Length: 279
Image 1 (spheres, rainbow, N blue to C red):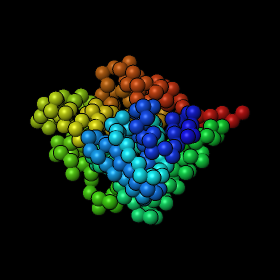
Image 2: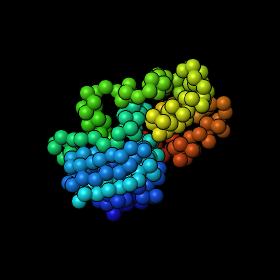
Image 3: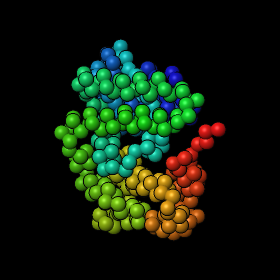
Image 4: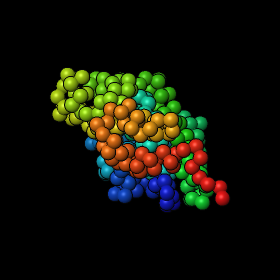
């Protein structure tokens, strides 16, 4: 097993490790090379065979792992790392819902080779921590893998948005979020009112269909907006705070600290066009 020290990425060939406790809060991206296996996930028994990929957004839900001479390779990546990389597009959230319901996708031989190549590129560079633009490099390689997964999923389901096959209430919530409502409204109660359901019912429905909370989906759309604003040096922090409808600058700062891992000023300095000195 290999692990990067900075970006929280693990490479492994052990099928038995997919529910390891240390992967709670991670996402596992796995391909079966040969043989077959099964596991229980989200209260369903799931089988996987050669040239099939599994995306496990909640490894803690995996149990009853069975192997029939299965050979696999996978990369496990911190959910927060991927969360901060991806744009808040509707397909990504909807595809995640579909994969929570059924985490295994069969691939063509060519697509299996492509996905395995994605994993190998990550594995080959993950220990190059001396590389000046290491975080950006690993982010780029991870995004390539994730967008390939989006492509595989879209082809498998004929490009139909995954959320359209889930509960109507989740589809409508995603539509509101995709329309940018979270720029001004981030309370669960607001979305429950818009959908004419109670906050409890909305929370339970979303949790059942996605494995995530409503607040998670709201934040999933909000954080990339804030990150983009912070990269725009023409806007002051106060202007961004007002544009995103935060009640105070201190609350805005706490929100950014929680979701981006640093203060607004630190994030802006870190992600400015010239962020490293070449002495």
